[in-house]
Length: 170
View 1: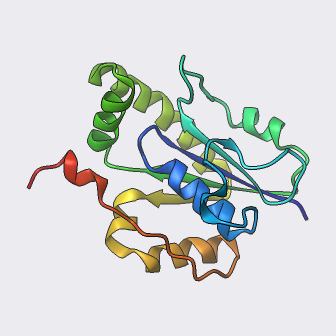
View 2: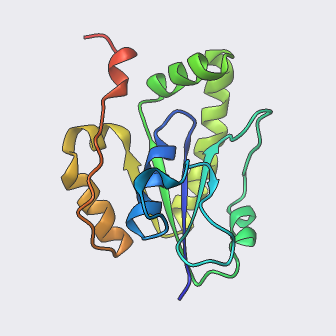
């Protein structure tokens, strides 16, 4: 049975990192850093394909608004599992401003549109919600939960850093 994994997240949520982790632990990459985490990790049609999309993705911004857009791309796969990556939206937006420029008001609108798309996925698909903050808090226990949901065995626990510190002063 051919499997595909779709990793979606708000820009600046850490979704690239988790896409790379999944690609590695499902055996699609020999080394953790072999794939950059953007787009597809291999050719469509190959088993254990990982598709990563920040929503929106690229510049100028591109969007998915209907889950069928992704389903049509991956129609040859018997099983598709979705991972939706979340992070504190304030930290996510500040990360975007530092990387891409733009305004907080524009990113707030992006968040609403992305959240509407994610809600459609969550409602109808096999979905795991991956939280950046939970990853930082629980570490390996949270990765084990993800691996159990992916139906794989792995002892790979990447180093995790709390990048929210630079945006949230205590």
